[in-house]
Image 1 (cartoon, one colour):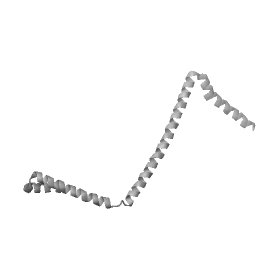
Image 2 (cartoon, one colour):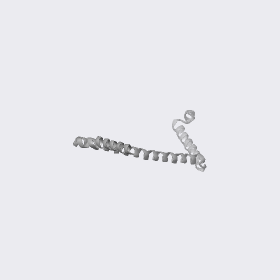
Image 3 (cartoon, rainbow, N blue to C red):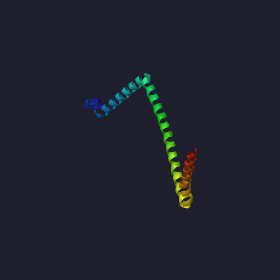
Image 4 (cartoon, helix red, strand yellow):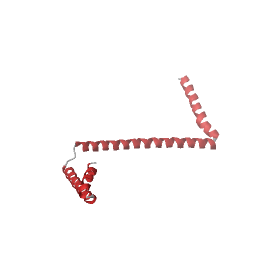
Length: 118
C-alpha cells in the first residue's frame, strides 16, 4: 500500500513514467537490503529441530508403509487360499468335503477314544 501511495504522490510532481521508474528503483534497493541482511544471518536451532521432525516423520511413514504392505500381502494370500479352496471344492466336491469335514471329525473321535483309555 505504501508503494501505491508513494507512486500516486510522485506521479503528480514527476509524471507517471518517472514516478514508476523511481518506485522500481526503490523496490530494487529495498530488495537488495533485505537480501544482504538475510545472507548474513545464520539459521537458528529451529531449523535443526525442523529437520529432526521431518526425519522422524519420514521414518514413521516408511514404517507405516511396510506394515501396510505386510497387511496387504497377508490379505492377498488369504484371498488366494479362499480361491483355491473354492476351485478345489468345485472340481472335487467329495474330496473337499472329506478333507474339510471328515478328517477333522475322525481325528476328534480318535482323540476322544484315546483320552477315555487313559
